Length: 474
Image 1: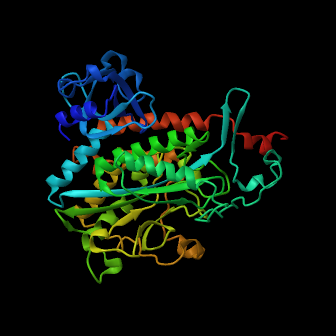
Image 2: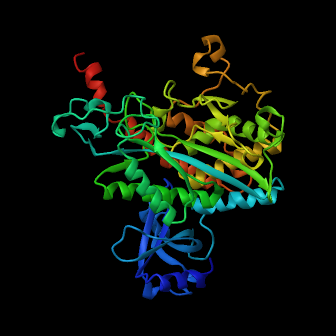
Image 3: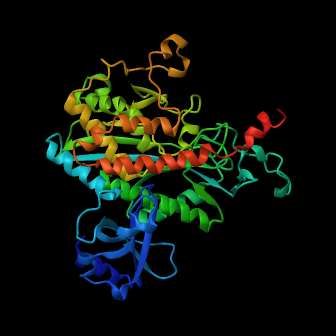
């Protein structure tokens, strides 16, 4: 859409406010709102100023002036505001007009530019399956003398004796019993359908929605693939609509990977492929899973760099509560067709040549999508350029349930890092695939690692409630 197209949209829809948004290091959106009367063509040339020192992980107070540069291709009308508001996604620039090298969205765009300059292909397509929970109540505290969390859901397995319902109605979702049941077990059909309706109004092409495996309101809504930066924009929009629709229903949604102990966590399986114009480059009829040699090398890059990659695709301490065996968690760094226990799965059901793709199942939605998608693309491109053969390196294919392998067989399989600190160690040791292209700067990597180390330390030094049960009577 042109600048004039945006201005026309403001006029045609009687827009009163324009909301300019950007994304921080952790993947959270921030915004500054201007009256529509103050927005004209010059706004899209000069940008909107803000204080970068107030955003964690950005700039120091001595160099705090930053500028949001609006992207006219990423606008949507906000369905939640009382006053008609148009939202616009922005890139971050320095006051002298240069791209800010810590801006996640600019990094995603540079990754796309690098792909085009590499000669490998013209576009990379991504499709995340971002799972989430819808709870009725959440409470938590972490202070000097108190540490607890409590979540509740009317459909949770632990509420089969819930007196507040005035006589139990049954049909609760059992542990691991939530995959696609009909109502009344699935109590959240309407709220998910409302989320889908709003997504469609905002321009997302939604393919389906359903209840997921876990009890207590785990859900999934799938929207259609798009190019790297556009998909990251779409994921931020998706999360915004999920969070606020839940709030309108008096509920709360979370994309936290492991909010419940003892049931499946929420992942973000990321489907990806490369095209040259209209030609899919990952398809070769008759080969293993109909994968081309390029696709296998791409998988080789993903699996080879996975320990470092996971610092960007699973960047929270909670991520590693999900990455444990037994809950469909893809902890094994191997590939397979159709096997959900492998880190990389190749979908084989009802796949066309253009639909041929690989699915990296390890990531979760605490990832900043701009950084995660860019890093996955660069890892895959490194595999293509260096011709990394995943089979020769022992990464598969494994076409049986890996959890059922013998202990001796399992010793041959690499696993994901066990903690956020281990993943950050791996990123420090293996970051050249990100920096040699100029997409990520070394300054960005160093700053990111330091930022995430602070999170890991904050969790590590706090007293955990479970420690009282283990050690209080010592």
